[in-house]
Length: 237
Image 1 (cartoon, rainbow, N blue to C red):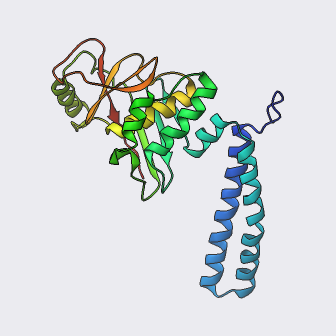
Image 2 (cartoon, helix red, strand yellow):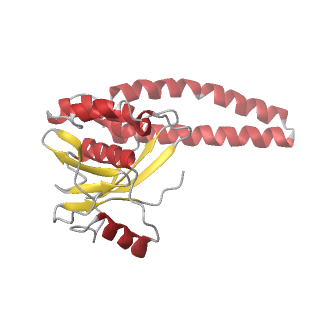
């Protein structure tokens, strides 16, 4: 049921409607292809008409999406899902940039939690960074561990060696991916993916303070208790 306090559609209702429509579309497309292959003109015509009819529910879905809260629109758009307290998965649609996600989150988080998702000065710097402004050429699935267990209080070299032993790889999560993962997780849960830690990525270190997500300039040799590391989890695009 819709939220009685706002009379707005809930994300569960929207996702259910979206899934049902997707299943119908898939069935119709498969039916049309099978009919065409078999040379069954009558069945092909029927399936083609079904596809035309399904265009109207698609327009309705767009209207339903606009009924969602800004938080739920963001979660649905990027398919944000909490795996556990330090892991999250999300999807960047084709043609989306990481900076676009961060800018959307910045506006939502101010209204939702009364704070910035990203430190404003850092967000401006990332607006000129190719890793953030480049757009995805296909749907891109991300799964990130924002505080990989067993890597606290170690230097970068020690963390990379442990990653290789435990996971067969030395690389941490890409810097821009860690930034969007943290931000998406915070929009969804209101909690930090880092749990108060400084977290290393492939090309830098991030932390989440009172002013938002920011870059930390700690040396790679530092191995304080506050230092952790990230990792990209297996994800099939």
